[in-house]
Image 1: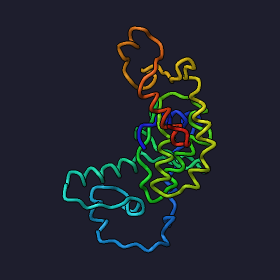
Image 2 (image 1 turned 45 degrees about the vertical axis):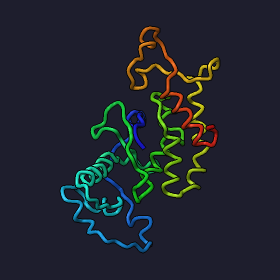
Image 3 (image 1 turned 180 degrees about the vertical axis):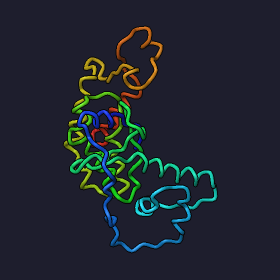
Image 4 (image 1 turned 180 degrees about the horizontal axis):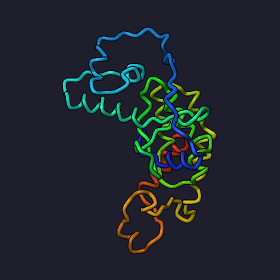
Length: 225
């Protein structure tokens, strides 16, 4: 999941403090028997806290060294952006290592410990991020929730989030033009440049990004056609 914005806005609103990492040990699936043909430690040179990677990431070995280096670098990026909020809310995934007034998230669905992804999903669905800071940037958190279920097979968790997904969807009704059936945004409020028509006429306007965002939201809840 990439490019959702608002995490640090929520952090500032709730005055969350980043505590030490209370990671869950043993891993939730430690009882499963696994087979390993790779020496996992050998892929972690230059990375801190080897145990976190050993507990969480899939290990790969491919002929293309550049691709392999990028893969493990991306895993390190995920780890650096995981921040513990507090008990009851769990982890949040930020866009910037040093907190700023906007934030976004990274890919979590492939981590072995799924609490990281679930904590982030619930920051939206329990009425946190957008209910407190209101809608700002378009995003595809609904699609991310669906793809999380597809990757993990955790369909009950997906179903348990449906009410929250519907609530998020309805927050965007204020940006819908009932005459055209299209959603509209001011491009600069959505981290995009003005289009030529938008620059000339001013104000919010419809666009592919907003319409595809709405399609992703509705299709993830079974409503997209």
